[in-house]
Amino acid sequence: MSETTSITPTRPYMVRALYQWIEDNALTPYLMVDATAEEVQIPREHVQDGRIVLNIASRATGNMSMGNDYINFSARFGGVSQEIWVPLTAVLGIYAKENSQGMFFDPNEYDNYVPEEDSDITVKTVPTAAPKPKRDNKAGLKVLK
Image 1 (tube, rainbow, N blue to C red):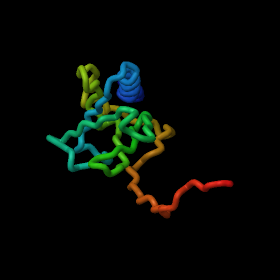
Image 2: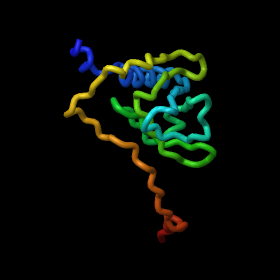
Image 3: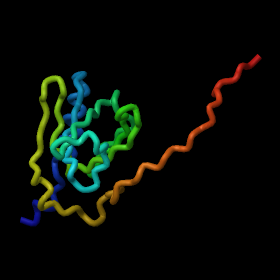
C-alpha cells in the first residue's frame, strides 16, 4: 500500500479548520503539544507530564502562521515575548477552553508518511530566536508649528 504513504496527513487541515471554528464562535483555542517531540521550541518551564497546552487565540498570539509542517507564533510567557515553533507531528489536539470541544489526533498518523522530495518544506530546523536590537528611548512624534 505505497499509495497511502504519499497521501498527506489530515492533521494540518483539521487544526486550521478547528482553529477557525473555535475563533468564529468567540471561544479560546487551546493547542496540546507533545513537548518531548523533536524541533519543538516552547517555554520548557511550563511543560507538565511531557506536554504543554498553549493558548493560540488571535488575541494572545502575534504573527501566527499555520502551515502544513509547522505552527509558528510569538506569545508572552511571564511578561516575556517568546517565539514558538511547533511541528504538526507534535500536535496532540486542539480544543476550545470553554467547552472542551475539539479534536485529538492519532499519534501514529505520521508513522508511514514520507514527504515528497520537492515539497515546500521551508523550515528544516527550528530557528533560534535572535535578540531584537534595542531602540533609543526617544519619542516618535514631533510637534509641528
